Length: 276
Image (cartoon, one colour):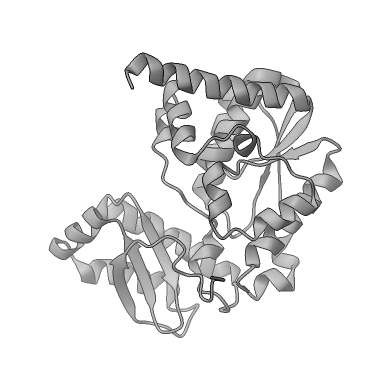
C-alpha cells in the first residue's frame, strides 16, 4: 500500500466517524483522557461543535496527567466540558475489587452522565476492545451507550493513524494507560491513598528511566514494577536501590507489603481468575 492509499483509507475512516456523529446529532462523550476517547472528542467537537458535550470523571483512580490532558484539549478545541466525580468510590461493590470491578465503575459513570445529560452517551471503545475482557461493556449495553469506532470498524491502530493524520502527534504516541485501580490485584480492596501513591510512583519511575511503560502493581506478596523491555535493560545499569527507595517511601505506610520486584510489562496482569 502506497502513502496515498494509506491517506485515503484514513480520510475514509474519519468521514465514517463524522457521518455516525452527524446521524446521532446530539451526544455526550465520556472522555477518560486516553487516546481513544480524546480523539473521538476532538473529531466530534470539530464536526458538530456545541452539540457535542464532553464529560470527564475525576476520582483517585484517574491519573492527574489524564485530567490535565483533557483540560488542555478542552481549552485548545473549545469544548463544552463537564468535570465531576461519578461516585464509584461510594460503591462498595467497586471498592472490593472483584474481577468485574470495571462493570461497577462504568455503571456509576454512565448512570451519572445519564442523570446530568439527556443526549446519547458515546464511548471511545474500539474494535480491538471487543476481544478483550472488558466487563464495562456490559454496563455500556445496559445504558444504551454507542461506540462510534466499533460502528465504523476502527481498531486501535486505526485510531493512532487518524491522530497522526490530523497532526496530533502527542496523542498518537500516547501509551495505553487504564485507570489506576487496574494496578491492584483482584480481590485486594481498592484504597484511594494507595492509588495516589501508585500514580506518584509511576511518574517518578518513568522520569528516572525514561520508560515508555510503567505499571506499579500491588500484589499480595510484593509491589511489582512492570517496565517496557528497554527500561528494564536500563534498570540493570541504573540504581535499583534508588527505584526501590522511591517505591517504598510512597507505599510503605499504606500496605504491609515492603518487597519490591521488577518484571516485564504484561497487559492486565493484576487481574486474577479471568474467565476462559
